Image (cartoon, rainbow, N blue to C red; front, top):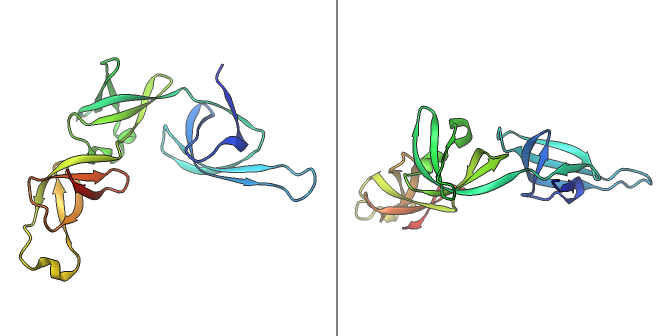
Length: 191
């Protein structure tokens, strides 16, 4: 039997199941009553891992939630087509597919062979967890002119091989490989 988690024990980044769907906690706020006999309440800001919807809800401290059948599986990105984005499970070697809704804008950070973690709920793929950094080639950027750094900005726009547009330092040239932080979509250094 799956373990039960009390609402008062749910903290940031905890995962739990509510109404047969997996959720992750974004914020947790515990309100303790000042009057005798009052209920301790837990206000959770949570994200539905199936739909991506974020909302807040208040629970009694003793309410219990199931631990979801949620696993992270190492996978590599293969390709995308009309059916969705396809990944190769690195353990079972089966091809798993995520829909465009499940992918969001993550495709702008993926090239063939990129290793990611795939979320599976009750055995079915529901989303992905990107690595902290990805390495991508600069497909296009303006050449920097001598004396450009005097303007003070020190950055210029660059389009990467996936179509992602980022700001890079003036010394970055076309064809170079750069490191991009997946959470912020910002330049993080040369690869």
